[in-house]
Image (tube, rainbow, N blue to C red; front, side):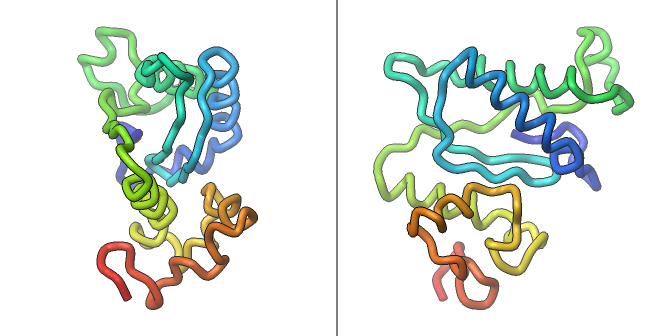
Length: 159
């Protein structure tokens, strides 16, 4: 999920408490479990498990975006088309979704999510990024705390 204006925008980190509250709000209304997550300054990645017979992730994203948007002050640039529809200018309208097909696919996506702060140059090692489920994976001994150190490991192609 991306912010509409990504360049030099740190809104998700600056308003992390509002984002956490939005996630809690949505989870109470439309249950889901977060398997992996990383919150970047201008976008986020997650893997969710939805309840059986419920594939409605779009409503969950819309609720999350709406709750977060109402929790923060106005002031962002709003395009004419958004203004006409009385929309805020915070989030991109679309998002990318992928259905995990097997364990290898799950593992690859979890790695990608956790590697994202290094990929974008915010930190040199995954453990240095606070806003990530990586730390929970370390507690569970799925990753070592040194997994993903720049120079040691490259998610895009080996050692």
